[in-house]
Image (cartoon, rainbow, N blue to C red; front, side, top):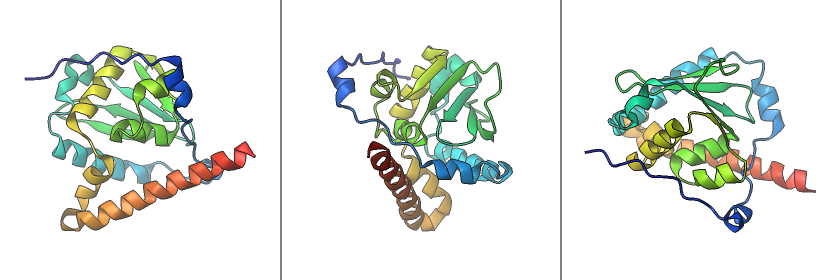
Length: 195
């Protein structure tokens, strides 16, 4: 039986003030990626989504009526967006140069913040109230998606590394290391900007 949706926890001003801003990727990464075609991203995105769904088969069924909506995800520090269609029988995640008009849901924020929402390293309420995350459109659908991800216990690195089969532990170290390098680069950029 599905658990009921949780209502968002209301943060007090002091809670938001204590949360450090989400680091953004260095601008050179976006400039480097800007001219590259998006087609090579489609297969890894499809495989990663398939791996997450294989490890958490009921994740999108928990969305109920919201499973048939499309979610626009806009990493504000990358030159492309993602469109998630969480249909329980045929979910898809595709990269687009810009989010199409008419999407019922748009979620924008730094890439590391969006990843942190999935793996639980960032609190969605705190990101929203600190304005590191911007949500437009159907907020109920966004809460349903967040609750489905939280309830499933998605570990983006481990779930994606499962694609490597028996080499999953090596894949997890590789993906985890790449994510740590991105975070390191983003934090270094934050320190440079603060000077």
